Image (cartoon, rainbow, N blue to C red; front, side):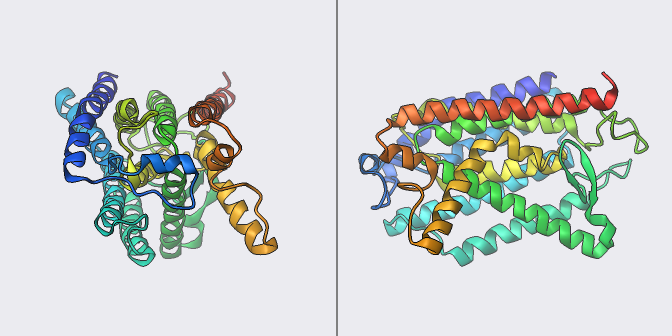
Length: 363
């Protein structure tokens, strides 16, 4: 329990006090955000605001996690290191994308092909390692079972070891792509994505801690009455570091934002969220906890699909938050109301996770 608190406190402190240092550096280098010309008119005033704030979030989460393990004396686990790898790797792709925009002075960054290749290499290597690093019980960070609140009876292993591995790699990369894009699309208003991610990772502290308190002692544990998550306590530690990093960054990212997280932050956070859903066996539950992110993605899909099929737009502009901006809502109003909706999704997800345990345990 102490290492969870230490991780959260370190992540919060480093992001809170490190962000203004990064702001000064980025201003000195004139590394500012470029705004798309077809966006809401009010966004043009944000041109030049320092971006790539995700750098400090990645550092804060990494130091929070590793520092906690060092101070408390509990070494990092394979699961925690894999989430860290996915976060840093996706953050690196985002950093290259942000830096390309700044260097070329345009709102378009890396070419889609290079972005796809980079994300693919990181995603595939993460998936393979997640299924190939067993502990003394034979448990691996990832599972070939499609998971909801736990692993379900739907398992990719039924197709054989090789096809099952390939299928898991495809499934894991679908999740990684989905969540990195979801956070990236949501990061369009001051404080919106940072606030939502703080709530989401906060929920995973509770879920991971609960799974640790009710972990199956051996590989023969009954799945309905305990959890076969390999490293649940370490999962709680790294999510605490992530939640603290998001909260500390939010202090400077709230409206009017003094810095943006950029693709560096949004891809890193999306990758971390995908990794957490995989190592905690809550891949489908994550869609409920991150329900607001799902709504934002759906609005973009609906808008594109409708325009291509009918030539008409459903929303004034996609993603969803821009539709409300063009409808006359103030930016702060949209962010607060989206946060409130996110609270409902997060609370529903945690409640469902807990209620299923009560049913399974007979409580």
